[in-house]
Length: 236
Ligand code: ATP
Ligand code: MG
View (cartoon, rainbow, N blue to C red):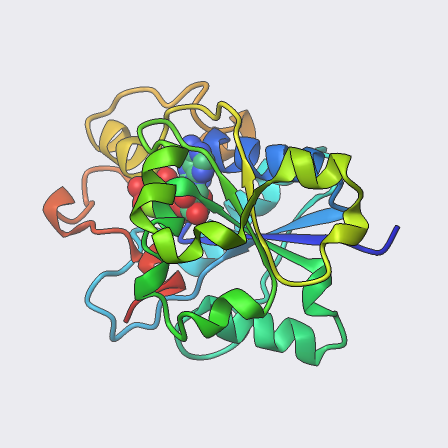
């Protein structure tokens, strides 16, 4: 089978078990050769900044994927200037010789529900396959209902694979129903700010990194301002 590359991008501030489970579910549902985990770049002039630096966010992503089959941390969005827009990231991958039909861009159902606000929508949907993974509190059906114009492009990943991967001759929106842990980076930052444990919510190595480097302790900006910067994967 052809190489099939998954991409999971986001602020990852910090990466947690929900991200990993979503990546693993997509990997297994679509027989992806690898899944690249991409912390996004947020330029300094942006109003909403991640709490941890790009360096720490990348370090935590690398620690998190250690030992997990097929998952790798990628600095692809950190190595270019400007904000990380999915369409631009996909363009660069295609420019490096990877066919768009070999790329599977993974999002949670909450992020995909906002797709119409993304940079270069709807063109972005033609640059690769999109894989939408269910997320607790964000029902797949609600997401579908909210995007009627796209429903004809949506297909269950399981059905597609059962009918043979050759049916993916054009960019598709592939739905993966699974149960990922009910965890978010926002809730983890809040727990750490309050001095609560994040044991079981992030991999052990990430938890150690957070404590060793004193990340997310007390000096976190008001949570009201912490509208996630992963919207850089979408709107401006
Ligand atoms: P924040 O609270 O800062 O927004 P987050 O937990 O939503 O953080 P992001 O970095 O915003 O994490 O998410 C990156 C991608 O991972 C998004 O596409 C998001 O939908 C997906 N994702 C995050 N957590 C889960 C989860 N528990 N299940 C499925 N997908 C998830
Ligand atoms: Mg988010």
